[in-house]
Length: 396
Image (tube, rainbow, N blue to C red):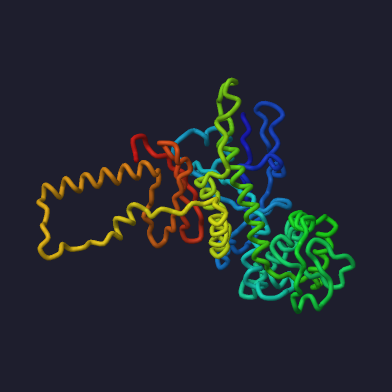
């Protein structure tokens, strides 16, 4: 009698699609299955405010030192679900997908609110008093994450009291926490040091100072924008590399991949911004977009064709003006429609009307392709959903 895999424990959430470092071990023999629960990575939930909407509390998941956002993915067509063992697929054929989240992004909204005007102890700056006690504890624990402590100077000014040796943007003394002093122009070496994470020892020292209440932080908007620009640039590079990679099933003659995709492409920059903005508060998203436009990486958005038609003024004919006959009006309308359709095909843009509960944003991913892929990133209530739709042949 063939053995079956043990059912997943409902009290513990296991990741179905995991990165290679956390992938469950493959059976050593054909037909062998994993019986032990310890063979599967276990994700423990942690309630935190969502970075784009700090008033909304959602569950992120922790596995080791990594923090993930869990999303449910379901495909109505295709056989990809059949390629996985049955115990990994949910009852409706969908999968749970995990996205690693930078813990520093989760703390940015609170640093902006609590430490924008003056220096505040780190554990007070990251934990607003209006949230629940459990959420406050989770935020304070997140502030002690090594990835946060070693890069805290990327988004804020640091003041450490009674520190023996200042490092990476830190100064000592209580007077520095009360008033800001003017700084001389930074040298290229200091700028390079500011862009590098602190050492492990310095991160541990910051953690000890934070627990003792002697690590003060103040949100720095310029540093934060520089940090966000670097992350946005990495995202653009990753998307461009993926588009230029060799497709699955390509022959050996095609191992060179497709033509390289320029990272300066405005549509690529806009697509990356649409993905990145889902993890930023609105004020930072606007500031980042303004910075990208200032540097010429984003072009000005053209008004939606449907919106232009809806807002077009309907001027009544003036006195004495000739009114066109029905046949002439029909011919004129047909010509105008053909002209609009041609303009829309040339521009390769489209808009989707949205309701008050769906703040959908549609971005053309492949503007040079007649079958462009469009990204929908609507926010429905407290959840976020990303869908990819392919235009049918012959559509404008």
